[in-house]
Image 1 (cartoon, rainbow, N blue to C red):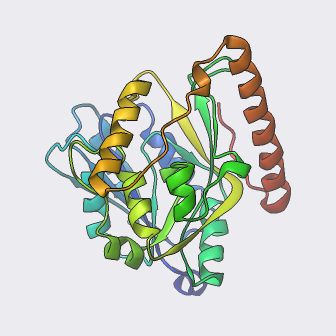
Image 2 (image 1 turned 135 degrees about the vertical axis):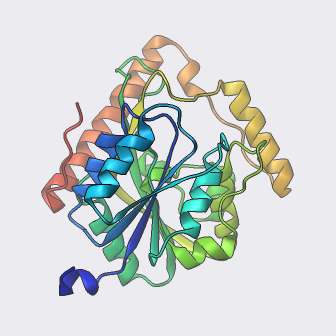
Length: 286
């Protein structure tokens, strides 16, 4: 490792995996293609039954920064994420789902911001859906829309969770002090719960740039709106707080959905263009 890398903070990238052989290589390539290269990749396999483990081990064999662990099947991502954090050595922690992608400048942009702003505990950016999605899909989304991005605890309580987990870069100390992700098997919103806990005594920041592509595919776990509502009620009761219910605008007419999706797409293209001009931040999504 050269002197320039030695002078940069190490980022630990946590990737939980379970039966993701179809997408994991593309995800890893988006990490290895980062302009910021002082990182370690901690892959935690949740006892996959396909070729996931074999594929990631091949990458680990060719790049010493990639470390692979296998745990007993937990069936919920909070467990491998916490395990990955326990094995990490970095000053900063980044999370990446095994089917999501990063743009080239993601880490560089975010690391520089945290280095220059010691009072900020974590930062997040925008994500845009791709894959099995089109202009008429309920799942097409730019998250968050810049004018709806939460920037403090009050925003989390009143607007909800606008923080894409794969976009977050957080100080490891902040994460450890907060106790990591809740491993309660009944809690389906463990990332939202973590942000709520951290925001009690820490500041965080939103970067209005598209740094993540969130893949929509047929094998993806998803729940219906009622289940999401129940999960939100469970979290609110557990933490003894009031949380606003979801507003299901996407369930309205096809015309409304089309207009909504056009707006999301146009805002995405605008901010993606800004990122390309500013940092030559690019990623071609097929």
